[in-house]
Every structure is written in structure tokens, then in C-alpha cells.
Image (spheres, rainbow, N blue to C red):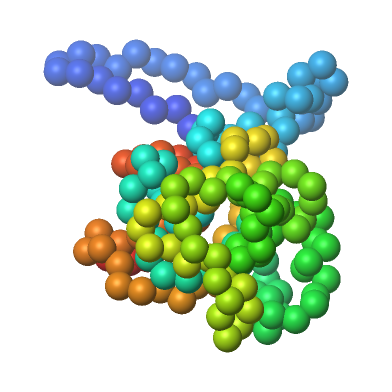
Length: 201
């Protein structure tokens, strides 16, 4: 398609009106400095934002709860490469642990009182909602979810990922409900805003 086109709609027996296409300027128009913020990359986001919390193990209504064990959940504000994902799967110390795009790294078996702290910084703790069991497994400490609880991270601009993201979770699922279950969720039920990671029913 051309960079610029004119479309004229004519209804019924109406006669099209003549028109002359605009002549393109030879020089691109400069963006005024005062309007520069209007042209930032997230002006037309790929991922819509919302005021919802990030939930681990449930949807925005607190339903579709995950059943099973979860050891770790991470949220990156960029798309990881295949090599980086493979390195993360090795579960060894890696530069990704200090990646500037790492928004949240919740090692879910390590509770501190009523929250699971964020290893990516002293912000965005995951609050325990309902009843969860924190147990030791053959792979280290995990949270065991039995459908009676989940974790919730309060809304924060750092969770508003508009251009790309990578969601990671280490899970050992048990039998889920027929509708499936949410693993990580920051999206209003029934919409396509935000982002989520879930099981296929």
C-alpha cells in the first residue's frame, strides 16, 4: 500500500465529488520539542495497561486458581531470547538475575510474615491471600496451592509493561479445574488488556 491514500465512500446513487490528493512535502516535519512526550514509544502500546494487581495463582476476580506447587515466578519488561530462556531453565546463577528489565523475582517458598519478598529489589512484595502452604520439596522451598489462596502484588507503574514482556514460572501442577488455571495474571477477566500466563483447559 502507499504511504498515503484517499478513500471516498459513495452511498446509493450519489455522485463522487472530485478531489486532489495532497502533495507530500519534500522535508519531513520536525516534531516540536514541547510535543516530544506525545511521541514516546508507548503512545500506542502493544500491551494495554490497567489498575489491577498482579496475581500469582488466580485471575482478576480471584478465581481460576492454580492447584499444585510453585517455586518461582519472574516478570521481565522485555522479550528474552531463546538462549536466555534456556539459561534461565538451567536454574543456575546467571546475569538475568540482575537484568535491568527484571521487574519481579518471587522465590515463592521464602515467605516473610504475610508476604513473599521480591528478590529483584525491596519493592513489589507478593501478599498472601487466603490459605497457602509453604513446604520443602526435593527442589527446595515451594508454595503449595490447594485452591484456597493465591499471591497478590499491588498495582504499580513498574508492572505496566506496554511494549514487551517475558513471564516465567516454575510449577508442578496438580489436577486443575476443567476451565484451567491462572499462573500469572494482570488482565481483567473477559478482556485482552494486560498480560497473563495460564494453563490450557
